[in-house]
Length: 499
Length: 95
Image 1: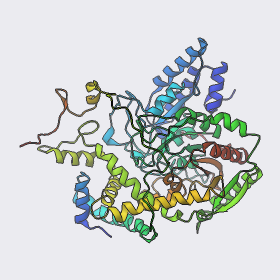
Image 2: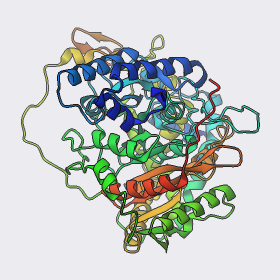
Image 3: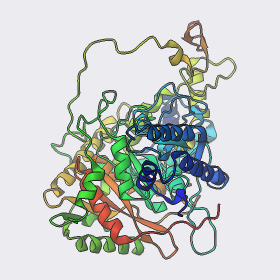
Image 4: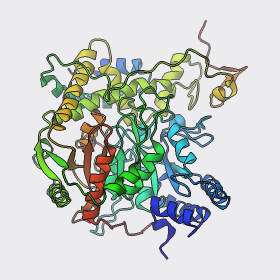
Protein backbone atom coordinates (compact mmCIF):
# COMPACT_ATOMS: atom_id res chain seq x y z
CA UNK A 1 0.00 0.00 0.00
CA UNK A 2 1.16 3.51 -0.81
CA UNK A 3 2.25 5.49 2.22
CA UNK A 4 -0.53 7.86 3.27
CA UNK A 5 1.88 10.78 3.01
CA UNK A 6 2.29 10.14 -0.72
CA UNK A 7 -1.41 10.87 -1.27
CA UNK A 8 -2.83 14.23 -2.26
CA UNK A 9 -5.89 16.15 -1.11
CA UNK A 10 -8.46 14.35 -3.28
CA UNK A 11 -7.11 10.86 -2.48
CA UNK A 12 -6.98 11.55 1.26
CA UNK A 13 -10.46 13.07 1.36
CA UNK A 14 -11.94 10.24 -0.70
CA UNK A 15 -10.07 7.56 1.28
CA UNK A 16 -11.33 8.94 4.58
CA UNK A 17 -14.88 9.22 3.23
CA UNK A 18 -14.75 5.63 1.94
CA UNK A 19 -13.31 4.33 5.19
CA UNK A 20 -10.13 3.01 3.50
CA UNK A 21 -8.20 4.70 6.31
CA UNK A 22 -9.16 7.00 9.15
CA UNK A 23 -8.50 10.72 9.40
CA UNK A 24 -6.54 10.05 12.59
CA UNK A 25 -4.23 7.64 10.73
CA UNK A 26 -3.64 10.34 8.12
CA UNK A 27 -2.91 13.01 10.73
CA UNK A 28 -0.52 10.72 12.59
CA UNK A 29 1.39 9.91 9.40
CA UNK A 30 1.87 13.56 8.48
CA UNK A 31 2.63 14.59 12.08
CA UNK A 32 5.46 12.05 12.05
CA UNK A 33 6.87 13.42 8.78
CA UNK A 34 6.68 16.99 10.10
CA UNK A 35 8.60 16.09 13.26
CA UNK A 36 11.24 14.04 11.43
CA UNK A 37 12.06 16.78 8.90
CA UNK A 38 12.05 19.84 11.15
CA UNK A 39 15.77 19.96 12.00
CA UNK A 40 16.85 19.54 8.38
CA UNK A 41 14.28 21.63 6.49
CA UNK A 42 12.99 24.14 9.08
CA UNK A 43 9.73 24.37 7.14
CA UNK A 44 7.57 25.02 10.22
CA UNK A 45 7.86 27.75 12.83
CA UNK A 46 5.44 25.93 15.12
CA UNK A 47 4.13 22.37 14.76
CA UNK A 48 0.61 21.71 16.06
CA UNK A 49 0.24 17.91 16.02
CA UNK A 50 -2.57 18.05 18.60
CA UNK A 51 -4.61 20.40 16.42
CA UNK A 52 -4.23 18.03 13.46
CA UNK A 53 -5.33 15.07 15.60
CA UNK A 54 -8.27 16.92 17.13
CA UNK A 55 -9.61 17.87 13.69
CA UNK A 56 -9.10 14.30 12.48
CA UNK A 57 -10.96 12.83 15.47
CA UNK A 58 -13.87 15.13 14.73
CA UNK A 59 -13.97 14.01 11.08
CA UNK A 60 -13.83 10.34 12.07
CA UNK A 61 -16.62 10.90 14.61
CA UNK A 62 -18.75 12.76 12.06
CA UNK A 63 -18.27 9.97 9.54
CA UNK A 64 -19.19 7.32 12.13
CA UNK A 65 -22.32 9.32 12.96
CA UNK A 66 -23.26 9.51 9.29
CA UNK A 67 -22.94 13.29 9.15
CA UNK A 68 -22.03 14.98 5.85
CA UNK A 69 -18.28 15.62 5.49
CA UNK A 70 -16.69 18.86 4.27
CA UNK A 71 -14.71 19.48 1.08
CA UNK A 72 -11.40 18.99 2.91
CA UNK A 73 -12.53 16.45 5.52
CA UNK A 74 -9.65 14.44 6.90
CA UNK A 75 -6.97 16.42 5.04
CA UNK A 76 -4.27 17.87 7.29
CA UNK A 77 -2.61 20.99 5.91
CA UNK A 78 0.14 23.45 6.65
CA UNK A 79 -0.85 27.05 7.41
CA UNK A 80 1.50 29.80 6.30
CA UNK A 81 2.41 31.77 9.41
CA UNK A 82 0.87 34.89 7.92
CA UNK A 83 -2.68 33.76 8.77
CA UNK A 84 -3.94 34.61 12.24
CA UNK A 85 -4.78 31.39 14.11
CA UNK A 86 -6.60 31.72 17.40
CA UNK A 87 -4.40 30.82 20.34
CA UNK A 88 -1.51 29.66 18.11
CA UNK A 89 1.53 31.89 17.69
CA UNK A 90 1.33 33.98 14.51
CA UNK A 91 4.55 35.79 13.62
CA UNK A 92 4.81 36.62 9.89
CA UNK A 93 8.32 35.19 10.53
CA UNK A 94 9.24 38.42 12.31
CA UNK A 95 10.78 38.97 15.73
CA UNK A 96 8.37 41.86 16.21
CA UNK A 97 5.45 39.41 16.42
CA UNK A 98 7.22 36.65 18.30
CA UNK A 99 4.89 35.26 20.94
CA UNK A 100 1.79 36.91 19.44
CA UNK A 101 -1.23 34.65 19.94
CA UNK A 102 -4.21 36.06 18.08
CA UNK A 103 -7.56 36.22 19.82
CA UNK A 104 -9.25 35.58 16.48
CA UNK A 105 -9.04 33.30 13.46
CA UNK A 106 -8.46 34.50 9.88
CA UNK A 107 -11.43 34.01 7.55
CA UNK A 108 -9.51 31.73 5.18
CA UNK A 109 -8.15 29.44 7.89
CA UNK A 110 -11.59 29.26 9.54
CA UNK A 111 -13.14 28.25 6.22
CA UNK A 112 -10.59 25.46 5.88
CA UNK A 113 -11.28 24.15 9.40
CA UNK A 114 -15.01 24.37 8.70
CA UNK A 115 -14.38 22.24 5.57
CA UNK A 116 -12.82 19.53 7.74
CA UNK A 117 -9.12 20.28 7.28
CA UNK A 118 -6.75 20.06 10.24
CA UNK A 119 -3.66 22.13 11.05
CA UNK A 120 -0.24 20.45 11.11
CA UNK A 121 1.48 23.68 12.04
CA UNK A 122 2.45 27.21 11.07
CA UNK A 123 4.77 27.35 8.09
CA UNK A 124 7.92 29.42 7.82
CA UNK A 125 8.08 32.25 5.25
CA UNK A 126 10.03 35.32 4.33
CA UNK A 127 9.61 37.97 7.00
CA UNK A 128 6.28 39.77 6.38
CA UNK A 129 6.26 37.86 3.05
CA UNK A 130 9.06 40.11 1.78
CA UNK A 131 11.49 37.93 -0.12
CA UNK A 132 11.89 35.34 -2.84
CA UNK A 133 14.11 32.78 -1.12
CA UNK A 134 12.84 32.42 2.46
CA UNK A 135 16.14 33.88 3.68
CA UNK A 136 14.57 36.85 5.48
CA UNK A 137 12.73 34.84 8.17
CA UNK A 138 13.69 35.64 11.76
CA UNK A 139 13.24 31.93 12.45
CA UNK A 140 15.94 30.78 10.05
CA UNK A 141 16.13 29.72 6.41
CA UNK A 142 13.90 27.03 5.00
CA UNK A 143 15.99 24.47 3.11
CA UNK A 144 14.52 23.07 -0.09
CA UNK A 145 14.20 19.28 -0.10
CA UNK A 146 15.53 19.41 -3.67
CA UNK A 147 19.25 19.17 -4.42
CA UNK A 148 21.20 19.51 -7.64
CA UNK A 149 22.31 16.19 -9.07
CA UNK A 150 25.98 17.25 -9.13
CA UNK A 151 26.66 15.76 -5.71
CA UNK A 152 27.47 19.15 -4.18
CA UNK A 153 24.55 19.01 -1.72
CA UNK A 154 24.48 22.82 -1.72
CA UNK A 155 21.39 23.99 0.16
CA UNK A 156 18.86 25.48 -2.26
CA UNK A 157 16.15 28.10 -1.80
CA UNK A 158 12.58 26.76 -1.68
CA UNK A 159 11.47 30.10 -3.13
CA UNK A 160 9.56 32.76 -1.29
CA UNK A 161 7.76 34.11 0.34
CA UNK A 162 5.71 30.88 0.79
CA UNK A 163 8.93 28.84 1.14
CA UNK A 164 7.86 26.79 4.14
CA UNK A 165 4.68 25.86 2.26
CA UNK A 166 6.52 24.79 -0.89
CA UNK A 167 9.25 22.85 0.93
CA UNK A 168 6.76 21.06 3.19
CA UNK A 169 4.56 19.93 0.29
CA UNK A 170 7.49 18.80 -1.87
CA UNK A 171 8.93 16.85 1.10
CA UNK A 172 5.56 15.19 1.86
CA UNK A 173 5.21 16.90 5.24
CA UNK A 174 1.74 18.00 4.17
CA UNK A 175 -0.44 17.30 1.12
CA UNK A 176 -1.32 20.97 0.72
CA UNK A 177 -0.75 24.33 2.36
CA UNK A 178 -1.96 27.88 2.24
CA UNK A 179 0.15 30.47 0.51
CA UNK A 180 -0.17 34.17 -0.10
CA UNK A 181 0.92 35.94 -3.26
CA UNK A 182 1.75 39.64 -3.42
CA UNK A 183 4.15 39.58 -6.38
CA UNK A 184 4.65 35.87 -6.97
CA UNK A 185 4.90 34.37 -3.49
CA UNK A 186 2.74 31.34 -4.35
CA UNK A 187 3.86 30.75 -7.94
CA UNK A 188 7.63 31.19 -7.61
CA UNK A 189 8.07 28.79 -4.65
CA UNK A 190 5.73 26.30 -6.34
CA UNK A 191 7.90 26.41 -9.47
CA UNK A 192 11.12 25.99 -7.45
CA UNK A 193 9.87 22.85 -5.70
CA UNK A 194 7.92 21.01 -8.42
CA UNK A 195 4.42 21.61 -7.06
CA UNK A 196 1.32 23.52 -8.18
CA UNK A 197 -0.12 26.72 -6.74
CA UNK A 198 -2.75 29.24 -7.75
CA UNK A 199 -3.26 32.87 -6.89
CA UNK A 200 -6.92 33.57 -7.60
CA UNK A 201 -8.43 36.83 -8.83
CA UNK A 202 -7.80 39.65 -6.35
CA UNK A 203 -10.71 39.60 -3.90
CA UNK A 204 -11.62 35.90 -4.20
CA UNK A 205 -10.11 34.99 -0.82
CA UNK A 206 -10.71 37.23 2.16
CA UNK A 207 -7.67 39.11 3.42
CA UNK A 208 -9.22 39.39 6.90
CA UNK A 209 -6.82 38.00 9.47
CA UNK A 210 -3.87 37.77 7.06
CA UNK A 211 -0.94 39.89 8.22
CA UNK A 212 -0.99 42.73 5.68
CA UNK A 213 1.97 43.44 3.39
CA UNK A 214 0.66 45.33 0.33
CA UNK A 215 -3.12 45.35 0.54
CA UNK A 216 -3.88 46.13 -3.11
CA UNK A 217 -1.84 43.07 -4.14
CA UNK A 218 -2.08 40.52 -1.30
CA UNK A 219 -4.14 37.45 -2.19
CA UNK A 220 -4.28 34.02 -0.57
CA UNK A 221 -4.31 30.78 -2.51
CA UNK A 222 -3.68 27.05 -2.23
CA UNK A 223 -0.48 25.13 -2.91
CA UNK A 224 -0.54 21.37 -3.50
CA UNK A 225 0.95 18.69 -5.71
CA UNK A 226 -1.76 18.63 -8.39
CA UNK A 227 -4.05 21.02 -10.20
CA UNK A 228 -7.13 19.19 -8.96
CA UNK A 229 -5.95 19.41 -5.35
CA UNK A 230 -5.51 23.17 -5.80
CA UNK A 231 -9.06 23.42 -7.20
CA UNK A 232 -10.52 21.56 -4.21
CA UNK A 233 -8.68 23.66 -1.66
CA UNK A 234 -9.40 26.96 -3.42
CA UNK A 235 -13.11 26.14 -3.26
CA UNK A 236 -12.78 25.78 0.50
CA UNK A 237 -10.79 29.02 0.88
CA UNK A 238 -12.69 31.41 -1.39
CA UNK A 239 -15.89 33.32 -0.79
CA UNK A 240 -17.37 36.69 0.08
CA UNK A 241 -16.42 38.15 3.44
CA UNK A 242 -18.05 41.37 4.64
CA UNK A 243 -15.03 41.92 6.90
CA UNK A 244 -12.76 42.57 3.87
CA UNK A 245 -13.70 45.75 1.97
CA UNK A 246 -12.19 44.38 -1.27
CA UNK A 247 -13.77 40.92 -1.01
CA UNK A 248 -15.62 39.92 -4.19
CA UNK A 249 -19.34 39.49 -3.58
CA UNK A 250 -19.66 36.55 -5.97
CA UNK A 251 -20.64 32.92 -5.49
CA UNK A 252 -17.73 30.45 -5.33
CA UNK A 253 -17.66 28.39 -8.55
CA UNK A 254 -17.44 24.62 -8.28
CA UNK A 255 -13.91 24.45 -9.64
CA UNK A 256 -13.33 20.77 -8.90
CA UNK A 257 -16.49 19.74 -10.75
CA UNK A 258 -15.73 22.22 -13.54
CA UNK A 259 -12.29 20.73 -13.99
CA UNK A 260 -13.70 17.20 -14.18
CA UNK A 261 -16.37 18.32 -16.67
CA UNK A 262 -13.76 19.95 -18.90
CA UNK A 263 -11.43 16.96 -18.86
CA UNK A 264 -12.70 15.35 -22.04
CA UNK A 265 -13.23 18.57 -23.94
CA UNK A 266 -9.54 19.49 -23.68
CA UNK A 267 -8.74 23.00 -24.82
CA UNK A 268 -10.57 22.93 -28.16
CA UNK A 269 -11.54 26.44 -29.13
CA UNK A 270 -9.35 28.02 -26.45
CA UNK A 271 -6.80 30.63 -27.53
CA UNK A 272 -3.52 30.71 -25.60
CA UNK A 273 -1.54 33.94 -25.77
CA UNK A 274 2.26 33.91 -25.81
CA UNK A 275 3.52 37.34 -24.73
CA UNK A 276 6.50 38.24 -26.89
CA UNK A 277 7.95 40.65 -24.30
CA UNK A 278 8.47 37.72 -21.89
CA UNK A 279 11.01 36.16 -24.27
CA UNK A 280 13.86 38.25 -22.98
CA UNK A 281 17.43 38.59 -24.18
CA UNK A 282 19.69 36.14 -22.44
CA UNK A 283 16.80 33.92 -21.36
CA UNK A 284 17.87 30.70 -19.67
CA UNK A 285 17.82 28.11 -22.51
CA UNK A 286 16.23 25.47 -20.28
CA UNK A 287 13.44 27.87 -19.29
CA UNK A 288 12.93 28.76 -22.96
CA UNK A 289 12.75 25.07 -23.86
CA UNK A 290 10.24 24.36 -21.10
CA UNK A 291 8.09 27.22 -22.41
CA UNK A 292 8.25 25.72 -25.92
CA UNK A 293 7.26 22.34 -24.45
CA UNK A 294 4.27 23.99 -22.83
CA UNK A 295 3.22 25.56 -26.12
CA UNK A 296 3.42 22.14 -27.81
CA UNK A 297 1.39 20.51 -25.03
CA UNK A 298 -1.38 23.08 -25.26
CA UNK A 299 -1.49 22.73 -29.05
CA UNK A 300 -1.80 19.00 -28.51
CA UNK A 301 -4.71 19.68 -26.16
CA UNK A 302 -6.47 21.49 -29.00
CA UNK A 303 -5.68 25.10 -28.16
CA UNK A 304 -4.87 27.76 -30.72
CA UNK A 305 -1.58 29.52 -29.99
CA UNK A 306 -1.63 33.30 -30.47
CA UNK A 307 1.25 35.76 -30.41
CA UNK A 308 0.37 38.68 -28.11
CA UNK A 309 2.05 41.83 -26.87
CA UNK A 310 2.18 43.21 -23.32
CA UNK A 311 4.23 46.33 -24.09
CA UNK A 312 4.71 47.61 -20.51
CA UNK A 313 6.11 44.33 -19.16
CA UNK A 314 9.57 45.78 -18.49
CA UNK A 315 8.07 48.41 -16.20
CA UNK A 316 6.15 45.95 -14.03
CA UNK A 317 8.96 45.22 -11.55
CA UNK A 318 9.95 48.84 -10.88
CA UNK A 319 6.24 49.68 -10.54
CA UNK A 320 5.84 46.87 -8.03
CA UNK A 321 8.88 47.98 -6.05
CA UNK A 322 7.32 51.39 -5.54
CA UNK A 323 3.73 50.34 -4.84
CA UNK A 324 4.41 47.33 -2.60
CA UNK A 325 6.90 49.13 -0.30
CA UNK A 326 4.60 52.19 -0.17
CA UNK A 327 1.70 50.07 1.03
CA UNK A 328 3.98 48.11 3.35
CA UNK A 329 5.33 51.26 5.00
CA UNK A 330 1.75 52.21 5.80
CA UNK A 331 0.57 48.74 6.88
CA UNK A 332 3.59 48.09 9.08
CA UNK A 333 3.19 51.38 10.95
CA UNK A 334 0.96 49.43 13.35
CA UNK A 335 3.95 47.63 14.92
CA UNK A 336 4.74 50.16 17.59
CA UNK A 337 5.31 48.16 20.76
CA UNK A 338 2.02 49.32 22.28
CA UNK A 339 -0.79 46.90 21.42
CA UNK A 340 0.90 43.59 20.64
CA UNK A 341 4.25 42.09 19.80
CA UNK A 342 7.70 43.21 20.82
CA UNK A 343 8.41 46.27 22.95
CA UNK A 344 11.92 47.67 23.35
CA UNK A 345 11.94 50.36 26.01
CA UNK A 346 15.47 51.64 26.68
CA UNK A 347 16.11 53.27 30.08
CA UNK A 348 14.69 56.78 30.15
CA UNK A 349 13.13 56.45 26.70
CA UNK A 350 10.08 58.48 25.77
CA UNK A 351 7.25 57.21 23.57
CA UNK A 352 8.93 58.18 20.28
CA UNK A 353 12.19 56.54 21.38
CA UNK A 354 10.26 53.41 22.26
CA UNK A 355 8.65 53.24 18.81
CA UNK A 356 11.99 53.62 17.06
CA UNK A 357 13.84 51.17 19.33
CA UNK A 358 11.05 48.58 19.05
CA UNK A 359 10.97 48.74 15.27
CA UNK A 360 14.77 48.69 15.01
CA UNK A 361 14.93 45.56 17.17
CA UNK A 362 11.88 43.84 15.71
CA UNK A 363 12.13 44.22 11.92
CA UNK A 364 14.68 42.41 9.77
CA UNK A 365 16.95 44.15 7.25
CA UNK A 366 14.76 43.56 4.18
CA UNK A 367 11.62 44.74 6.00
CA UNK A 368 13.41 47.91 7.10
CA UNK A 369 14.68 48.46 3.56
CA UNK A 370 11.15 48.27 2.14
CA UNK A 371 9.63 50.47 4.85
CA UNK A 372 12.33 53.06 4.12
CA UNK A 373 11.73 52.94 0.36
CA UNK A 374 7.98 53.18 0.93
CA UNK A 375 8.34 56.07 3.35
CA UNK A 376 10.52 57.92 0.85
CA UNK A 377 8.28 57.46 -2.19
CA UNK A 378 5.26 58.64 -0.19
CA UNK A 379 7.01 61.61 1.38
CA UNK A 380 6.21 65.22 0.56
CA UNK A 381 7.84 66.31 -2.68
CA UNK A 382 8.39 62.80 -4.05
CA UNK A 383 4.86 61.38 -3.93
CA UNK A 384 3.90 62.37 -7.49
CA UNK A 385 7.24 61.54 -9.06
CA UNK A 386 7.30 58.04 -7.64
CA UNK A 387 3.98 56.83 -6.26
CA UNK A 388 1.50 58.55 -8.58
CA UNK A 389 3.67 57.74 -11.58
CA UNK A 390 3.80 54.07 -10.53
CA UNK A 391 0.02 53.92 -10.12
CA UNK A 392 -0.38 55.37 -13.63
CA UNK A 393 2.01 52.80 -15.08
CA UNK A 394 0.06 50.15 -13.19
CA UNK A 395 -3.04 51.29 -15.09
CA UNK A 396 -1.12 50.84 -18.37
CA UNK A 397 0.02 47.34 -17.33
CA UNK A 398 -3.59 46.36 -16.57
CA UNK A 399 -4.67 47.84 -19.92
CA UNK A 400 -2.05 45.69 -21.69
CA UNK A 401 -3.76 42.59 -20.31
CA UNK A 402 -7.25 43.91 -21.09
CA UNK A 403 -6.16 44.45 -24.71
CA UNK A 404 -4.61 40.97 -24.86
CA UNK A 405 -7.91 39.35 -23.81
CA UNK A 406 -9.39 40.46 -27.13
CA UNK A 407 -7.01 37.99 -28.80
CA UNK A 408 -6.65 35.16 -26.27
CA UNK A 409 -8.39 33.44 -23.34
CA UNK A 410 -5.37 32.58 -21.21
CA UNK A 411 -1.66 33.43 -21.30
CA UNK A 412 1.22 30.95 -21.03
CA UNK A 413 4.62 32.05 -19.73
CA UNK A 414 7.45 30.74 -17.58
CA UNK A 415 6.95 31.17 -13.83
CA UNK A 416 10.55 32.08 -13.02
CA UNK A 417 13.63 33.15 -15.01
CA UNK A 418 15.70 30.22 -13.62
CA UNK A 419 15.37 27.09 -11.54
CA UNK A 420 16.00 27.33 -7.78
CA UNK A 421 19.19 29.13 -6.78
CA UNK A 422 21.41 28.33 -3.83
CA UNK A 423 20.98 29.95 -0.43
CA UNK A 424 23.21 33.00 -0.16
CA UNK A 425 23.62 33.38 -3.93
CA UNK A 426 21.38 36.43 -4.18
CA UNK A 427 20.89 37.57 -0.62
CA UNK A 428 23.61 40.26 -0.78
CA UNK A 429 22.02 42.03 -3.72
CA UNK A 430 18.40 43.19 -3.24
CA UNK A 431 17.96 44.01 -6.94
CA UNK A 432 19.13 40.58 -8.13
CA UNK A 433 16.61 39.04 -5.75
CA UNK A 434 13.80 41.33 -6.94
CA UNK A 435 14.42 40.30 -10.58
CA UNK A 436 13.35 36.76 -9.72
CA UNK A 437 9.75 37.95 -9.81
CA UNK A 438 9.94 39.36 -13.34
CA UNK A 439 7.35 36.94 -14.80
CA UNK A 440 5.02 36.79 -11.81
CA UNK A 441 4.62 40.47 -10.87
CA UNK A 442 2.65 41.71 -13.92
CA UNK A 443 -0.37 39.45 -13.19
CA UNK A 444 -0.27 40.57 -9.54
CA UNK A 445 -0.35 44.24 -10.52
CA UNK A 446 -3.40 43.52 -12.70
CA UNK A 447 -5.15 41.42 -10.02
CA UNK A 448 -5.43 38.42 -12.37
CA UNK A 449 -5.69 34.74 -11.47
CA UNK A 450 -2.43 32.93 -12.21
CA UNK A 451 -0.99 29.55 -11.40
CA UNK A 452 2.25 27.63 -11.66
CA UNK A 453 2.30 23.99 -12.73
CA UNK A 454 5.38 21.72 -12.74
CA UNK A 455 6.70 21.31 -16.28
CA UNK A 456 9.92 19.31 -16.03
CA UNK A 457 13.43 19.10 -14.64
CA UNK A 458 16.60 20.93 -15.66
CA UNK A 459 19.81 19.08 -16.51
CA UNK A 460 20.78 19.63 -12.86
CA UNK A 461 17.64 17.80 -11.78
CA UNK A 462 15.71 20.83 -10.51
CA UNK A 463 12.02 21.55 -11.23
CA UNK A 464 10.79 24.26 -13.59
CA UNK A 465 7.26 25.63 -13.58
CA UNK A 466 5.00 27.01 -16.27
CA UNK A 467 2.66 29.88 -15.50
CA UNK A 468 -0.91 30.24 -16.74
CA UNK A 469 -2.48 33.70 -16.38
CA UNK A 470 -6.23 34.13 -16.81
CA UNK A 471 -8.88 36.79 -17.14
CA UNK A 472 -10.50 38.22 -14.00
CA UNK A 473 -12.77 35.63 -12.33
CA UNK A 474 -11.70 32.87 -14.78
CA UNK A 475 -9.88 30.60 -12.34
CA UNK A 476 -11.55 27.69 -14.13
CA UNK A 477 -9.85 28.61 -17.41
CA UNK A 478 -6.51 28.79 -15.58
CA UNK A 479 -7.05 25.47 -13.81
CA UNK A 480 -8.21 23.72 -17.00
CA UNK A 481 -5.15 24.95 -18.89
CA UNK A 482 -2.97 23.95 -15.95
CA UNK A 483 -4.49 20.48 -16.01
CA UNK A 484 -3.76 20.14 -19.74
CA UNK A 485 -0.11 20.92 -18.99
CA UNK A 486 -0.01 18.61 -15.99
CA UNK A 487 -1.38 15.68 -18.00
CA UNK A 488 1.17 16.13 -20.77
CA UNK A 489 4.21 17.07 -18.69
CA UNK A 490 3.89 13.80 -16.78
CA UNK A 491 5.83 15.35 -13.90
CA UNK A 492 6.26 12.66 -11.26
CA UNK A 493 9.68 13.61 -9.87
CA UNK A 494 10.06 14.10 -6.16
CA UNK A 495 13.14 15.02 -4.16
CA UNK A 496 15.24 12.07 -3.01
CA UNK A 497 14.88 11.88 0.77
CA UNK A 498 18.06 13.05 2.58
CA UNK A 499 16.50 14.65 5.66
CA UNK B 1 17.09 61.66 -7.57
CA UNK B 2 19.58 60.21 -5.15
CA UNK B 3 19.59 60.29 -1.38
CA UNK B 4 22.42 61.26 0.96
CA UNK B 5 23.09 60.29 4.55
CA UNK B 6 21.04 63.18 5.93
CA UNK B 7 18.04 62.24 3.77
CA UNK B 8 18.22 58.59 4.79
CA UNK B 9 18.41 59.64 8.44
CA UNK B 10 15.29 61.75 7.90
CA UNK B 11 13.45 58.84 6.23
CA UNK B 12 14.40 56.57 9.13
CA UNK B 13 13.06 59.15 11.57
CA UNK B 14 9.79 59.41 9.63
CA UNK B 15 9.55 55.62 9.56
CA UNK B 16 10.24 55.47 13.33
CA UNK B 17 13.19 53.14 12.91
CA UNK B 18 16.30 53.79 14.98
CA UNK B 19 19.42 53.34 12.85
CA UNK B 20 23.08 53.45 13.82
CA UNK B 21 25.65 55.49 11.90
CA UNK B 22 27.00 52.24 10.52
CA UNK B 23 23.57 51.08 9.30
CA UNK B 24 22.94 54.50 7.80
CA UNK B 25 26.15 54.33 5.79
CA UNK B 26 25.18 50.90 4.44
CA UNK B 27 21.65 51.99 3.55
CA UNK B 28 22.61 54.99 1.42
CA UNK B 29 24.11 53.03 -1.53
CA UNK B 30 21.42 50.32 -1.23
CA UNK B 31 18.55 52.78 -1.42
CA UNK B 32 20.26 54.71 -4.21
CA UNK B 33 20.63 51.50 -6.21
CA UNK B 34 16.94 50.73 -5.87
CA UNK B 35 15.84 54.31 -6.55
CA UNK B 36 18.03 54.57 -9.67
CA UNK B 37 16.40 51.39 -10.95
CA UNK B 38 12.78 52.45 -10.31
CA UNK B 39 13.40 55.82 -11.94
CA UNK B 40 13.10 54.17 -15.36
CA UNK B 41 9.34 54.62 -14.83
CA UNK B 42 9.89 58.30 -15.59
CA UNK B 43 10.36 57.45 -19.28
CA UNK B 44 6.81 56.06 -19.61
CA UNK B 45 4.35 58.43 -21.28
CA UNK B 46 1.39 58.59 -18.90
CA UNK B 47 -0.36 61.55 -20.50
CA UNK B 48 -4.08 61.29 -19.77
CA UNK B 49 -3.69 58.09 -17.73
CA UNK B 50 -5.50 57.91 -14.41
CA UNK B 51 -3.64 56.32 -11.48
CA UNK B 52 -4.92 52.83 -10.62
CA UNK B 53 -7.32 52.81 -7.69
CA UNK B 54 -8.80 49.29 -7.92
CA UNK B 55 -7.47 46.33 -9.89
CA UNK B 56 -10.82 44.58 -10.08
CA UNK B 57 -13.90 46.72 -10.61
CA UNK B 58 -15.68 46.62 -7.28
CA UNK B 59 -17.93 49.06 -5.51
CA UNK B 60 -17.34 49.96 -1.92
CA UNK B 61 -20.11 48.64 0.23
CA UNK B 62 -21.86 50.44 3.04
CA UNK B 63 -23.12 48.56 6.05
CA UNK B 64 -25.88 49.48 8.41
CA UNK B 65 -24.79 52.08 10.98
CA UNK B 66 -25.07 49.80 13.98
CA UNK B 67 -22.72 48.63 16.69
CA UNK B 68 -21.31 45.25 15.61
CA UNK B 69 -18.46 44.86 18.05
CA UNK B 70 -17.34 45.70 21.54
CA UNK B 71 -17.26 44.28 25.03
CA UNK B 72 -14.02 42.42 24.35
CA UNK B 73 -11.55 44.51 26.32
CA UNK B 74 -9.69 41.51 27.71
CA UNK B 75 -9.18 40.09 24.21
CA UNK B 76 -7.98 43.44 22.88
CA UNK B 77 -5.44 43.77 25.68
CA UNK B 78 -4.41 40.11 25.76
CA UNK B 79 -1.25 40.58 23.67
CA UNK B 80 -0.23 43.99 24.98
CA UNK B 81 3.39 44.25 26.18
CA UNK B 82 2.09 46.35 29.09
CA UNK B 83 -1.59 46.44 30.01
CA UNK B 84 -2.62 48.14 33.25
CA UNK B 85 -6.02 48.92 34.71
CA UNK B 86 -7.70 47.98 31.46
CA UNK B 87 -5.52 50.26 29.32
CA UNK B 88 -2.42 49.98 27.15
CA UNK B 89 0.58 51.16 29.14
CA UNK B 90 3.10 53.51 27.50
CA UNK B 91 5.96 55.68 28.75
CA UNK B 92 4.94 59.07 30.16
CA UNK B 93 4.00 61.44 27.32
CA UNK B 94 3.12 64.60 29.29
CA UNK B 95 5.83 66.34 31.26
